[in-house]
Length: 223
Ligand SMILES: N[C@@H](CCC(=O)N[C@@H](CS)C(=O)NCC(=O)O)C(=O)O
Image (cartoon, rainbow, N blue to C red):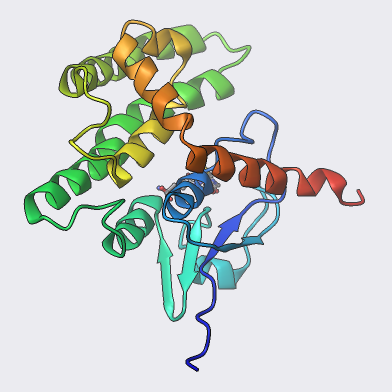
């Protein structure tokens, strides 16, 4: 009998501040694997703000989560990991060249055109608390996020997913939109419904439950 292949491994943090728990990007990878019923294991690497060991930096040059390992393959960047997983399963990435290209375009768009705008507002909100510059900085950054969400809303229209079929593009876009403030999404009922539709999927629910369980590990450790 051929040897049983090792389970893919995802890194996650065992300790994150409350506001970040539920928002770390290993969720994207867990979600994709749960969509296709593929088992995985997690390797907990410590606290989000702790220095990373040199061996970890060799795998992920920026010291971030997630890293994905599968046999000899070591990947970093959630988008690259999702494309790899999708390449192995048409339920996440269509085989048809044109449809596959569109799904990858949406994956990159989520990471490169939408996430930076939303992430900027999150950082300004967290780091600007109590400062006299926060309101002005948010005023300056917000129109960029509003414009991207308006365009995304138009592109999605009344469809369930970004293209005909659910794909890795939806996984990453929905995860990006989860970090937008409710006020930012509020003008776009279709985007709010899109996030609700995606996060209601059983695979998202199971991924989130596993993520939250790992987030809580740090709390259970002796101080
Ligand atoms: N572009 C990276 C971003 C990963 C990322 O931002 N990870 C965060 C947690 S959600 C992290 O590990 N932050 C710690 C740090 O940047 O030092 C990806 O998509 O994988």
